Length: 273
Image 1 (cartoon, rainbow, N blue to C red):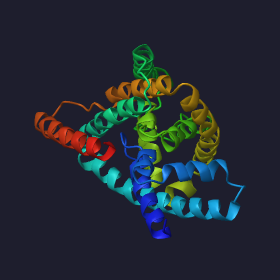
Image 2: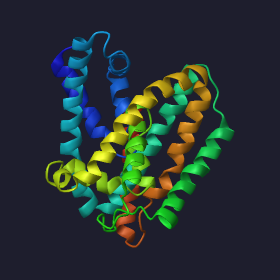
Image 3: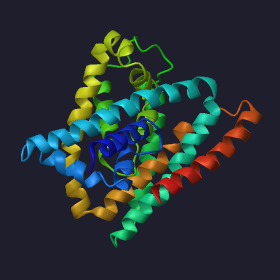
Image 4: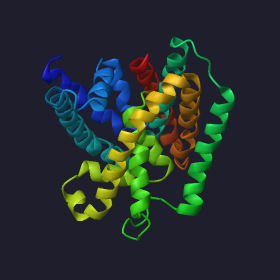
């Protein structure tokens, strides 16, 4: 595998990881890098030079992809919020068949009880975050709402989409109201990052800690309880959709948004097929 190809995969994965509904891990699976990535991470010191080089090139690509595409998403959010949110809904729904297919290919069954429970939990978490924690990034981010613990937990939550194929860390941030803040940091890592280093550091610590723990945990769960694990993932994915539903104040925007949602669904479905 050439370094150029690996870097290119990283750019695509980085672009995907900040888009709700698109999993960076899915991109690495489709392009044949996921297994090698997991192996390099879990066996870093067995062949340190080879594994470190592999992860460094992939990581640089991911970083570049995340930064440049964050600016695109920021522009769309500011200028076309309704259409953008409908596009995200389409991307999420389009990725769901991939998750069902993953279970079927392993000759496992979907646990619909677990899926419904996690759907309710995911939806409740979004409601709970709005009414109790008030983790709304439209609010003043310097007001103390984004505490060290909140940002640390957000980093852990975001790490989920880095490890599990088919699940996006970005929409997990949306349901706890932290997506736009993290997006602003990714779009302007130097200016925003240096000005709010006290907020960025706990997020990065949580992200790294989450990836380390999840690599081992997910490997265990997928080996021992594959069908149940993916049932939980599917329920969580579907339960995140209400957090994306935009205001229906402007009928024309909603109509355009619905069309975009269908197009996004098809694109996401084809990408993960």
